Image (cartoon, rainbow, N blue to C red; front, side, top):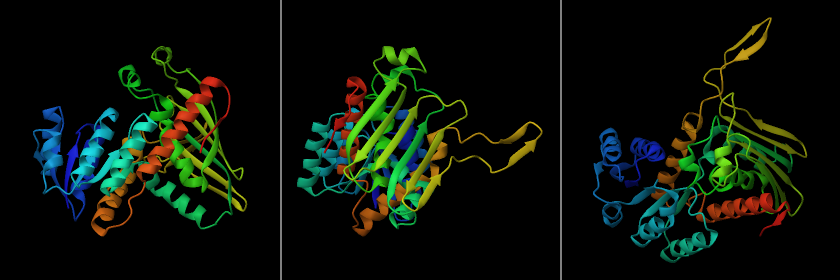
Length: 329
């Protein structure tokens, strides 16, 4: 399976390495507007440097593309790759407009293209194990899901201005995880948000601290807590309370060594940020894509998963602005 990478930035490098390491895949080509970045990825993986994205998409010897470019290019590139008969892996979100996503997914459906969306947290070993055990009925039916996701610090303001907002950029991962765990679609969204970390984020029209509650038709609840600041490191925790018990996934640390003195107990800080925390998840995600394409399996998360997470993000933003809960579905 020959793969082309569109975008050689931070996430593009991660996916390129994972694809190149897969035993049945070959990284054939990479393109980035920054030729130096593309060259670095090519040198590391043995790929060639393409002159344009069109060159990769139109190359009939390339079976699949990894779309790791800025969000506003995703939908167009998915459509182009689908029409060219490529299998497609695309980073989230497909687009910041639900209507644009719907139009894009129609092209995918019409061309019968294979599409997988990059919600990497589904593939984290701890979170994936929690979901499997929950689905098996180990703690009964889920009643209350709690998701905590807090970054060690905010991104640059230049990024904030083009991110689509905290709900679509950061919390969209947690909204997808909520759907992954609840076992039912949320039908009501309630949100509150503030700008507490950096006034410049508010001046840019965004928020940096938010809580969201989701409710399903049967009454199952999910609470999501997001912050752009966690002084103790990258905070990623999940707890599911069910009718027969509880499942919990903790933060990861560089080591499990703990020191105890008269001052109390101390351990290593949490892993610094998402590249370190989700190393295994990114690898498993790409393995799932490659194996799914070569073996003809259904690819998940689907484009529809991407759309539904975006709809929840839109509803959360509407609720935060209006002060009222929003019905969805």
